[in-house]
Amino acid sequence: MPNQHGAWAMLAVPFLAGTFLGHPRWAHLPLLAAWLLGYLAAYHAQQWLRLNRLSRNPKAPRRHVRPAVCFGAGAALFGLPPAVPHPWLLIAAACAAPFVLVNFLYAYANRERALWNGLAAVIPACGMLLVTLRLGGGSWSAGLAPMLACLLYFAGTVPYVKTMIRERDSRAYYGGSVGYHGVAVVPTALLTPWLAAPFAVYLLRAAVLPGRGLKVGVVGALEILCSLALLGTVLAAF
Image (cartoon, rainbow, N blue to C red; front, side, top):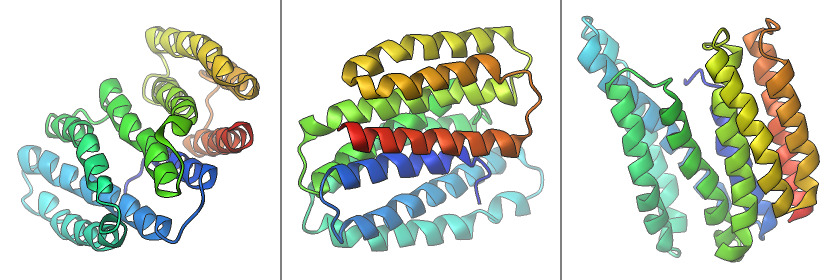
């Protein structure tokens, strides 16, 4: 299983926001299963691609083949029921493909932790808000503002988490993270004043928490709370 726990919040929050901003339908359940299984299939396929090039142990890449195939088959199986009555879902999947390709290229280069790779993953994840909202009878235009709120938040988590773990000693990453969060407060407040408070808190945590030696589990728990705060605010404001 992927050990990037923050990815699960990124997968779940936009999906749930779009679902409940519209009208939840039974079709959302198989779509959610397909979405999560597709992520797992892509993860294992990327690990196979990376290890097949780098590892001297032939068993290392092979252990990812079966999960990639099984999760991929499951994603197709669950994705078919909502896609048959809503064929535009296939177009939405095609729109996500270029960003997934970027993730595969970074995996092949063994640079999965690169900043741009993380940002490439954020875009289709946040785009799922538009998909689930439309599936529930909402309009594309109604989903733009909440999608941008999710995009601005999750894009900020990419450099912020690096300042807490892998780039904890980098002043450049710290300055970039704080600067980004400071700027992000303005457009989110323009989307709706409701977002000003949580994004001010996100700015505060980006400025204060790095360098305090928090354990990875604590960092993850705080990000889950921040993600839930975003979800609650988006549902209340839009």
